Amino acid sequence: MQGKRVIVGLSGGVDSSVSAYLLQQQGYEVIGLFMKNWHDDSVTISDDCPWLEDSNDAMLVADKLGIPFQTVDLSEQYKTRIVDYMFDEYQRGRTPNPDVLCNREIKFDVFLDIALSLGADYVATGHYCQKDTITRTGSTTYRLLAGADTNKDQSYFLCQLSQEQLAKTLFPIGGLQKSEVRKIATEQGLVTAEKRDSQGLCFIGKVSLPDFLQQKLATKKGAIIQIPATHSVYADSRETTPEGLAKKFMYDPKDGIQVGTHNGAHFFTIGQRKGLAIGGTVEPLFVLATDVEQNIIYVGEGKSHPGLYRRALWIDNADMHWVRPDLATGQPIQVLARIRYRQPLALATLCPMEKGAFLVFEVPQSAIAAGQFAAWYLENELIGSGIIG
Image 1 (cartoon, helix red, strand yellow):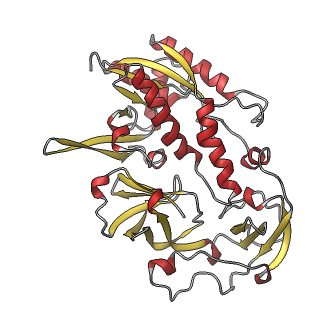
Image 2 (cartoon, rainbow, N blue to C red; image 1 turned 180 degrees about the horizontal axis):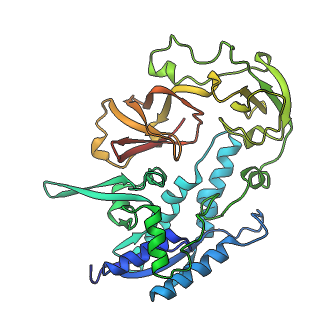
Image 3 (cartoon, rainbow, N blue to C red; image 1 turned 60 degrees about the vertical axis):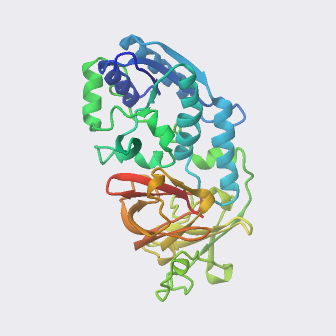
């Protein structure tokens, strides 16, 4: 690949470090770029500055590899496109996924544009996913494939990428196991070789989400109502249509008993267990539903509570995205699908309708929440995704 320029998003972690090294070995002209995406003093993340440490590690890796390195400040775009969106979604009682948004809005949009303006032929990241191509009658179609390390596969986080973005993107470590990546980093003496994987919000670092949200969203005391498993409003076994199977559970305070209070229904999401601070039950309590207008949380005992499960979900046309537009035929299609990262893929049928589509699972799924991303696959290829309505 002599003469081809690749700009690597050096995050200060081992995965992007090894990505830069592998591309260099393949003959690319490699440039490291660190994205600074957070320095909003109005929202305190923690006492330390994780981005500062990460930036320093990225610089040390670039120096070790002998590649050019610079930092770009994308904090304004990050605040507008990710953080403000997150606050708005939680305020509405929905559950956004900032990591998916970060990839769609920052890494493969703003960052990609910057890289191309610097003369890059490609951008590269340390994601555990793979890409290949199909060529028919002179046109090329790009496929987004799961990473070879099934335990680290990150294709779900890239479920909103387009053909145009995939055409300009490389995933150098997608065919490796995590253990192999660390071994390469150790052999090359990279400072990130033993660095722990980052956790928490994309680019912000490890932070308690309720603490983060409470610095922007007002707290407001409300009731926690426990719903018995025998209550009649949960999934009706007589429902057979996609519309019926996707029906959301509607609760009323008189359906259960008050077991506690909370600081704001918008701080909680369906399926959440931590943060309720209620004891005295045989099994833990899980959030079944939130009512942000009435400021009520409905909970049920045990992870098998019927109120946690639904067989189908709805996606509006405006929130539908196809990584493979050629497969959007308007006809029902059998797929494998997930609604969150690391969730095992489950058999489902995508049923297009006039105003959107139903995703109907063969087996009921736990904690389907509005605002989450559903992604669907054919075998190990991610072909589309959408925001759950």
